[in-house]
Length: 636
Image 1 (cartoon, one colour):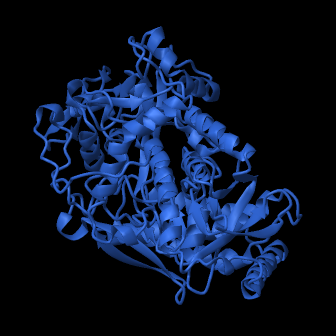
Image 2: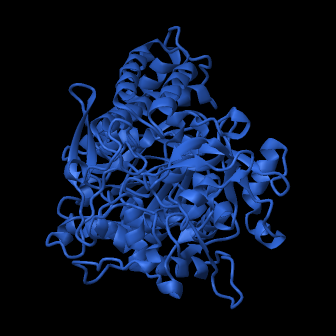
Image 3: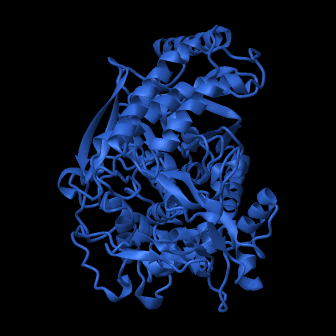
């Protein structure tokens, strides 16, 4: 039998887990990435990875799933979220076995800390560098398989186009070498996209500069649907900076750090229960999250904490009357401070102040995208389960995993679920792809892919020529527009109008201005026209796709007239389940070069929809029974 080949684009946690598991099944993997794995953005995750392993206090994987669904304001499809949480303990066991050095408790077992959106301790961690340690552990496994010639890495290469046959099936991809700008194609039986987030669309964010969203947007313009693009997570604690924003991990609050400002009893604020109360006592520390949410305190979900911080600052109570509040670790013991050393070192390095002695000044920041590529998820009980493929997009043979898919987090992600979702979705894709090969064998005959198929090779050569022509046109384009200034205009609009608080007037104005920026693209002239290490060219080639994704985010936000999770619209401050308990589907209209928005019902088969409140102790509240659940599919 002809050896099957798969391209995995992206070498963060999602890409590494998919590549590892595919190679173990004797499927040859091309692992293509912008950066080496150990510089992927997954390395920046600090706090931990969730799994309900400890049975203390009555925790369970089902409760983990319920709190994840509730944390996402009930917008996540329930079957994939449930199965992710049921698989989580096995994933932690696998990571432990391959050498991830999780912190241990006094009995030598994996230690767990609390995290946002739950009152249970279910977050396994490695001090405050969990993402880095997980990447290193999986990277070692991939290196082993690379030595056995089961994986070939291409680092410093960027995806620029999907190759499709006449039946709209993915048959490979076109890449560009970032060093010499060489353009070439790789043929494959399936393609897996694991390209992460899109923070650079907003300019300043906690994301790496490599997180542009361009790959997903390129695929979007080639027919891949996007889902829930309007849901952008704002992290409550980051260091403000002129160049970018630097995350101060939720791990700090999990270990006891407290958010506060100096109070002012002449001012009043609306509490979550609807009451109007004084803003603490004048000139005394006001721990406002602890007063507003006495059970969850500083560990309420991120969208809620971010909005409360913004409200306090809008009242003029921010530190030095600016948009910033205190995050205080000065009362913590040396033993605890050691667990959160990484974020404290980051703060000291970039501010010059010692957070062990002086409270940190922090503010909210764009951090994560819950939306992404639309992927299928047939539940175990679905009658057509055998004929559908989990994590596959609407393009046959194209899979999407990790932060670049939409599946697991709904309207808001709970902290420490990201690493879990990345690894889980990668393992799922690796399990589904052999099924895809088997079920589609009649459509994937080897002569479709071998070089003897002259028509296919000619088509690919023509695609490469077109990309070369686009490269030369961009390098030689004349005009008076600077791509970096256009990006700044877009980012300023998105940051101002499409983040914590939204309203239809500003959203529509933003969309109109994005269209205006798009018209100016043809007038860009590059300051660097060289063929080697030309970062200006690379950015200019990505920017139109970043702009298109920004339009999808904004259009979807305009259409959703409610407030849910990270999408808070002042004109419509409440959740509207009747009209918007639906997944947003964005489709690129090639005829109009515009975006069509439609909706798909959320799969709510397991849990009843409830009010999303964090006012009461959920451990003392009887959780509604899970419905329509018999078994789940293990990925390990």
